[in-house]
Image (cartoon, rainbow, N blue to C red):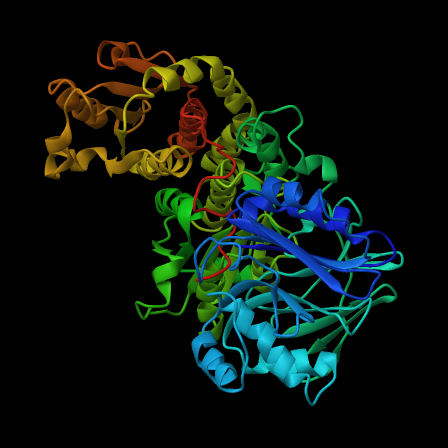
Length: 606
């Protein structure tokens, strides 16, 4: 949710920290701040509300020369968006400085205790409690032990980095249900919420696990559990390059990532298709052949990919599937059965609710699977079996290439499960053949970008939209509406086209455009009937239709065409024009579509 970075070494810390914050600003842009241990021995800090640019402007008049420091970009949870609530937070003596991602659930109880002991608080945040708690523990303990004891009193989630004025060249970091990694360099160490913050400086990282505390100095790092036991941690090499995190000439990351989808899907399927056998190669376990039911849990756009997967798996693999919002999963007393498999989907691999659902399933000894993009993420490490997306970093807050990659991988899983059951070789061969074509077919959709941009401008004065689809494209109606809401703040509602007569049709008039996803599939004629109903009530209609469909031109005001493919794969194509429409709509309204208000890329707090 928020972004943390820390540096200790021989270089000047400030430029490294600011550069890291720029690469993590998609994690939070309500406010930002830095604290640097200066050569004078004092810690100098500066904070600003709003985008990182505001902080940089304030820093321009201040010289920061120290080589140890921490920085933070905030997505507000406790306390309003103010400079006092911005991180880093300090103790009473201005010696302990803390940056934090997560939620301290018992902060009010701890704050009351500390107030009784004479501590003075400056902010409304939960994080400040931790700085004062460490200060209190330092009265009778050394620095590392004070941090450890403070964390043992905390309930909730945290990724933290701590700076102590009396301990030069040292940062202490810790993690509990909030992502944090260490970067390993020559004579320097880094800590960050996200690998993108440190890629410019090192590709060697150590992933912290829950309940671990790390001590960083220029000489290296050491990792302990909260029982003071030294942990032997593996160093990983990052596959992503710095170049992959840049815009490469595109005005926004979102547009860049929409146009990267052919390459992203090609990477997701590379080496995994066996066309002659009608099979896929995913390094799967023999246990998958015993699966009788699949439960899917995810949040947001990933949840909608799971809903498409439900149609795929039930129709072609013959397996019952249930899809849950991960944020609700633990609260409905799920009933697991023998033969269940639990599949979680998360681009970042750090989504708090999805990880909680995964852990619930693991506690019940259910076979777990994960679809994830970030190698080394918590979900990737904890899921029993995993499929990596291999799409490179997705920086834009509104997910695009991760979604279509997830749909593609769910199609691969459908073949995997289906061929181990009743799916014929011919059916498997046909699906594999069509999946291979998808990158090229998306390219043909992207060629309509200029026409979709004109369409977005044409409809830009409308403030309400209805997105309608059926069967495989019902979740795409929800996803199209979600994208428009996320980046243009326009009211848009996804709905089943067959459900229109049960309420939404009352809203139809010339001021409510309907966007129909109407490929020539098994429910084409049904959807055409729904379009007729809207047309009869003078509602403007935009249609996403199959190339060569002449009938639709007589019914819709505007049409965007997608190529013909298998019905189960149409969502991978039909969502692309909706992504472009939302992007151009938001840009036309003057918004920064990479940084939608109130949103962050990875939701790491519940």
